[in-house]
Image 1 (cartoon, helix red, strand yellow):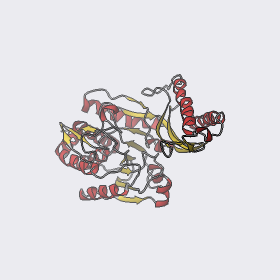
Image 2 (image 1 turned 45 degrees about the vertical axis):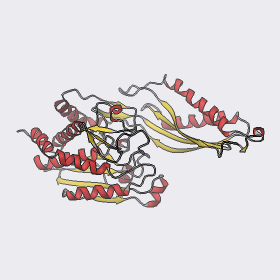
Image 3 (image 1 turned 90 degrees about the horizontal axis):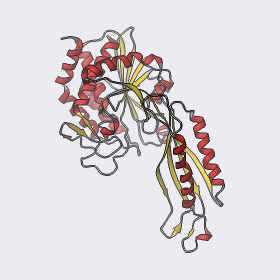
Image 4 (image 1 turned 30 degrees about the vertical axis):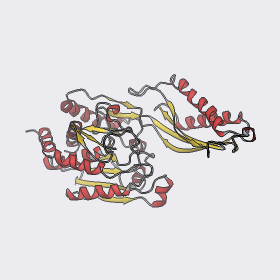
Length: 408
């Protein structure tokens, strides 16, 4: 057998073990918010050490974690040095996830397997790639025994809140500086670019009053509705702003959370809403934020008795494709076509991820890992998130083959 076939065979032989590993990861909740992620890191480290894998634990100071809006984070690094020369390849997956929400027909932390699919929050994005990358590394070392270069597994816990105390923290503290990197995937495609994301918290202040005498107050909710009408109208304008990146269309705005008021018989004196503005790679994030703030301020100034505060929650830059990513793209496309039996396109995605942080540091990277044909099929961020186990197996084989090309 050639090395590629041997890698495939090793992964097949150890696949039941890989699935059990993923089930254990799913069973430790990492809902973010609230973001108490250190227990999952501890459990992951124990499971890796049971495989004979040495793990570096890097707890982030509590003050920094709390400033980022989370409760606890311990980032993990598995560092494998194969010899002098060669490249350092990093594989990064995140363990933090959005809360499960309603509508599940399976336990979101059960890791149940039904009809060849594993169910649970983060089964598809991206605890699955803790297992993809771990077992691809084990296959590589068992079969190819690389003599040069270095491989790093980076398991971090701040993708949902922007990555500043996840990958960015590791880079700032010079704990990692790879030549190339692959970040957790969510579809068959190899992703080379993605949208940016700006999130703002808008607080509308009026004057609380008894509902029996509404004229004695200033209704913050009515003012918020007018602001929302103006903001949502921007989506019509955004449709005329198109991206040249395949897979990405145009910018858009969404309001995902709104709260306010004190009781049914009280005129609301304060209403807060949080908006999410997706930015195509061609947009300038500073200009986007300035324009939104100006639009909100101008609209509020025409509402008597109303004042508005705007606070930035998140600014995630878009991911730009770097020329040096070609060895990754070529290897994944080549092996993906062999394993999946279909062409693997390289394109952009409207999602945002923490891989952009590596690209901003000048480290060429792509997004690839276990996932279905499309993100929608995975039910990511919806009820009954799931992953076809055959997609997990095949993505692990593609990653192992790619590492073989890059490190041997």
